[in-house]
Amino acid sequence: MTTPSKPSASQATLVIVAHPHLETSRINKRLAAEIDGIGNVTVHRLYESYPDEKIDIAHEQALLTAHERIVLQFPFFWYSSPALLKKWMDEVFEHGWAHGKGGDKLNDKELLIAISSGGAQNMYQAGGLHNYSYSELLRPFQQSANLTGMIYRQPFVVSGIREVNDEQLENYAADYGVYVSGVTA
Ligand SMILES: Cc1cc2nc3c(=O)[nH]c(=O)nc-3n(C[C@H](O)[C@H](O)[C@H](O)COP(=O)(O)O)c2cc1C
Image (cartoon, rainbow, N blue to C red; front, side, top):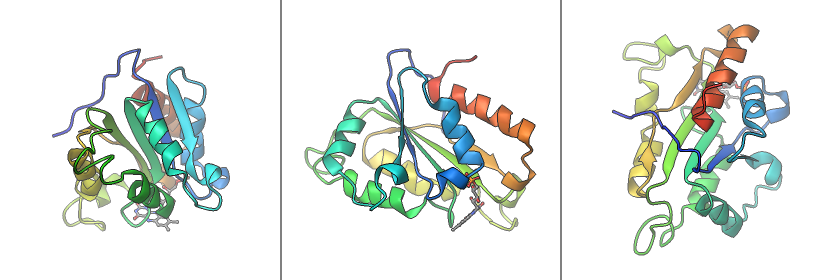
């Protein structure tokens, strides 16, 4: 059972947006635009920052250290994240830094996952096309939070994206602003 996050005003939030084609994206582009410029929220577009996919590990670790809440925002690709976000975790969550002996730098930070998914919600259940729920499929993120001493919060999911009309997308964007900032408009 995961609980929603209720950030205090002083908590800084880092949003890692990982979409390989953000410019032509509909959902993630709109969600990212919603949180741009919110106080205490840093929006970090991973593919734009690293077009060559060479991640500056020290810079990423400094960013993580400076924030208490970490949001990973991405389109669901093969029931997981786009490749650069996986690479980011592989390289930045180092042994001795994020886990293992002395690896306590992420302790007590919150981890939030925000995904968009082509499949509809009702496909993500036993007997449905995708057989497993989002929370089951997101277990690697949940367990990574456990291992690194982070607090895993309830994910934010936009599902069935082809059925999401423009008005619904605006509602999702408003909800996402609240999810990320904790502040109700
Ligand atoms: C390589 C690839 C893999 C995908 N895998 C999944 C998947 O496993 N489950 C799913 O629901 N949608 C999947 N999709 C659909 C994307 O999640 C969907 O296009 C995306 O969430 C739309 O967001 P956007 O408008 O920001 O691009 C996949 C799309 C691509 C291109």
